[in-house]
Length: 202
Image (cartoon, rainbow, N blue to C red; front, side, top):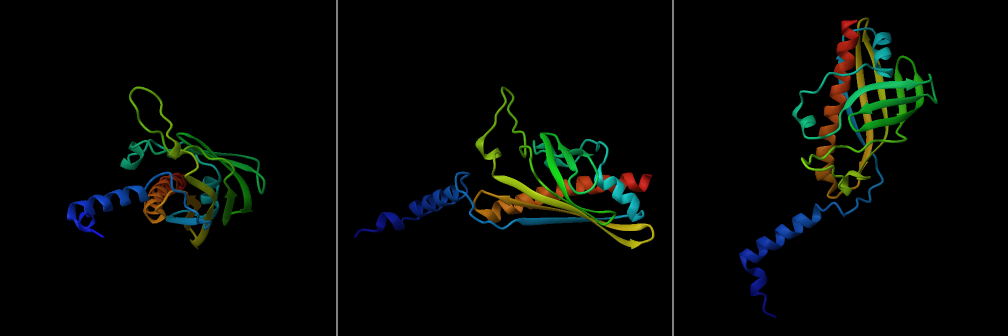
């Protein structure tokens, strides 16, 4: 069998390029059932009770300066809640809609946990002529649950940790996980830093 045409360096390069592009296609579904946790922490110079008040709900956050949010990626603006305790519904509002979060643990002032019942699309893709809605915005990133954990480390010092558990259904997972983790950390920091500033100012 003549294998010369396959061992040609040019053909080999083209073949590897095609394989790499194919492996990153949005049409390949990731079968992994494991949720991916992303945790981010800040230290708030205030007592734990005051931090808790700004965790449950928070006022409108200033417009972002972070470059990642200038690309169309959705970012949080404020949070509201209906009810108190387990079963209350928290709404974390983003620029593309709201995360609807039924409360599953209300351990004031130490732990707030919630499921994610509904979530908006992760970004608005820019088009100067008409609205576009590509299929990779639907279902390929899904947040399942989250929590805020507060730890008293002094009379007026609190460690505030936010965690999101999510899945990506795009392969290769390791590539998309890297970007998803990066973006979620930036979203966490936007919220946690806002809570820190609001609490310390009060």
